[in-house]
Amino acid sequence: MSAAIDIPTLPVAQIRAMSLIANPSPSFEELGSVVDADPALTAALLRAANSAASSPVDRVRTARIAMVRIGASETRRLVMSIALSQSFGSIAESGIDEAEMWRHLIATGVLADATAWGDVRHSEAFTAGLLHDLGRLAMAAQDPQRYGKVVTLVHRGVPAIDAERTVFGMNHCQWGESIGRAWGFPSEIVDAIGEHHVGSQHGLSWIVTRARELAASLGIGDGLTPPEPPEPGSEAALLPVVEHLGGEEAVMQRVEWYSGAFRAA
Image (cartoon, rainbow, N blue to C red; front, side):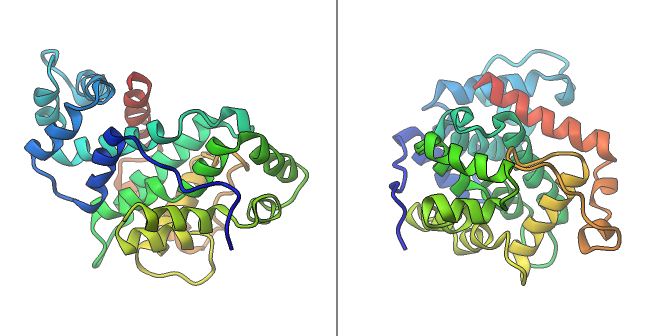
C-alpha cells in the first residue's frame, strides 16, 4: 500500500545528525563534526549547557565546551532531537498541538531510556521513544490540510489510527516504519516505530509503548488525543520508572531541559 505523500528527503545537515541514530556511542570529535555544520545545534547546546538544570558555574561560550559539560550521551540525544524537529518544520497548520506533541516525544524518550533493561541499550531506547511518531510528524508536515481531516475525525470520536487510515490509506505507524527503513535506521528502532500500537510486543517495542503510557500518566498527551493514564495494575502502572527518576517533578524538569534546547535551535 502506498501513501499519496513521498518519503521525506533530508537536507545534508540533518542527514549527518540523524546518522547518529546508528551510532549509540559517538566520540566528541564525531559529535563536533555534526554540530559545527549547523549553527542551530550550537545555539541549542549552549542553551542546554548554560541552563540552571546543568548547574553552570561559568557560562559556556563554545559548542565543544558545552559538549564536555553535558556529556557525549546527552549531546547525541539533543542533536538527534533537534535534527528531527528541523527535518519537518511546523506541524501546527495540521491542527495538532505542536508543543504537546514534542513534549510527548521527548517524555517518551526519557522514560523509555529509564525503562530499558536486558539486551535493550538505554541510548537505543531513548532514540526509539523520540522517533516513534515519525510517521505522524511526516504526514502532518507534508500535507497539513489533509492531516487536518484526521484531526477533525478524531475530535468526532474516531480513533486516530482509523482516522489516518481513512484519510491517508495507512496509519502513522506504517508510514513511520517505511520512512525509517528508507532512511536506514537500525531494524530494532524501525520495528518499534511500526509496533508501538500493536497488541503483542517485546523488547524495544514493549519499552516504547510502556513509556508512552507513563508519559500519559504525567498528563502529557500526544498533541492529538488527551492523555489516557494506564489502568491500575497494568504493566506500565507497575513500573517504578518515574520514582527512579526522582518523581514527576524531576521528569518534567528533564523534559523541559530538552524543550528549552529546542527553543534555542
